[in-house]
Length: 240
Image 1 (cartoon, one colour):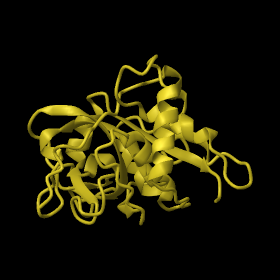
Image 2: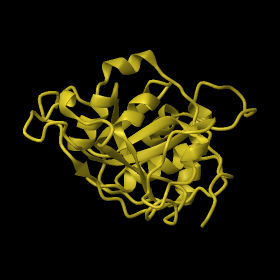
Image 3: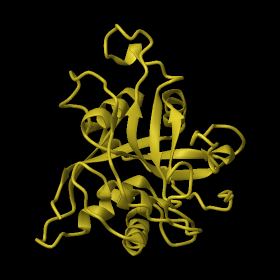
Image 4: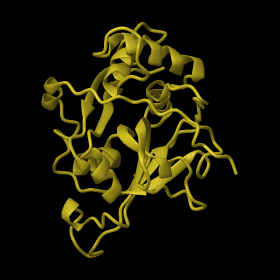
């Protein structure tokens, strides 16, 4: 079994207060929560490059509902441009932010000259992430990464144990909700956060986890979002 503990995780937290005006769920707040999986058949592998932001965004582009497939070279291009756009000057640091990554994508045009991503928004908290995953599409998470998360177990489960080794950008592509009361309302208060699972699509190739994917609980998502975590989704995309 491959040991992934030598992979570099270098997402850096960067929050712009102006983002609070751009909620991902402003138009779907009345919709019930639901389980949903978004297909993505691209597994760009960052290898030992510390470019998770660029690779996570290539996977978001490649996923349904409107897939635009790009390769690892494109991911590196996005990562390098993001480092020029983020809040840190010079090059004496490793990594970049989810925010800078999506800004870099806005500069990239499709064959018709339109930006690949016209608009992006943010999920502010766990309930927002679940509703966004249920109705709009995959979400790019910027989260702390613990040493235990490098290597999922035989069931594709990752656990939050051990030391924090850095920050990682990774795509959440699905939610499997288990209700506390199966006959109860489809609301956040009825979500069993210890049994409901977030499906993650990583950038370490198809052999990581189960076919390149892994799962953690909604409870763990909530914990990570509370520790400088973030969740971003494009809301207006161009066609290929």
